[in-house]
Image 1 (tube, one colour):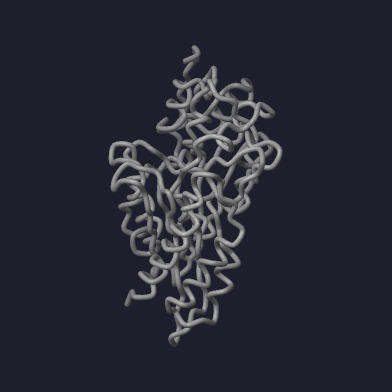
Image 2 (tube, rainbow, N blue to C red; image 1 turned 120 degrees about the horizontal axis):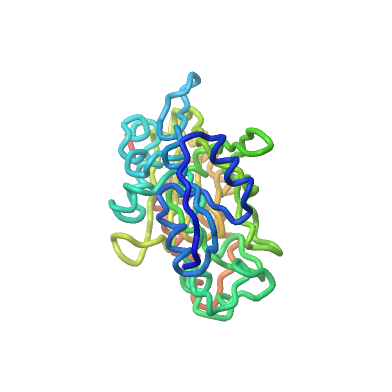
Length: 328
C-alpha cells in the first residue's frame, strides 16, 4: 500500500475543500471496498478524507411519501429499517443478501453505489486491465471469464458490477443527490453509471471532488409487492452469478406495471426496460414471465466460460416474478 494521509471532517464544506486541493484524494466512509483496493495496489489515493461523521446518517420520510436515505447510512441499518422493509422490501432483501453481517455493519449507502468490480484481473495488478490502465488490454476476454458480464460489455471490458443494493435501487428509480464544487445536482440511478465504451475506467458521472449526500426513493405503493432473488455459488458471502429485483402492479388479474432489474450479469445495475414493457397488459403467469426473460437476455453476449448465465438469469427472472405474483 502506498503512503497516505488521513483527515476526518465534520462539515460538508471541509470535505469539499480538502478534496478540491488534492486530485489524488478519496472520500472514505466504511472503507469496505476502498481500503481493500488500496492494499491490492488498484487504488493509489494519497489522502483519505473521512466523511463518516457528516450529517448524512438519517433515513427520512419525504412529504410526498418517498424516502430519503443518507449517504452514510449503514447497510445493516437500512436493511432493517421498518419503513424500508414495509415500503421497499426488494431493497431490504437485496441488502441482506450481500456481504456478511460484519461488512454490512460498516458499509454505507454511498460506498455501495461506488463499489468496484471483483474481476480477478482488475484486482491483480500483474495483469493488463483497461479499467486500471486504459489501453493496456482486457485480460478477462481471453481468460477465465466465468463470473463476468454478458450484458453491457464492450471489446474493452467485460467486468461485472458487484452490488446487490444497486440492482434494487435501479428497479425503484432511485435518484442520487450529489454536491460538489459546482453546487448540488441530482442524477437518476439509471443515468449514474457509464457504459464501458472506450474508457471502462470511467464508471460513473461523478467528477473529482463531488460527494454523494443521499439517495431518494419515489413513493411507489405497488412495490410493497416486490422481491430480490440472488443466485450464487454458495449460500453466504458470495457475489451473484445472476440476480433479479422485481415488482409487479397487478390489478384485476392483469399486470399494469412491472419493474425488473438484473445483477451479476451486467457491467452496471441493469434495468430491463423492454422486458418490463412486454409484461404490461399480460396475465401474471409463467408464459408471460418466460417471454419477459427472453426479452431481457435478448442482447446478451456471452464469453467462453459464462454462456450458462443466459439460461441461469432467465430462470432467475421467471422464479422472482412468480414469487411476486403469488404474494397476497
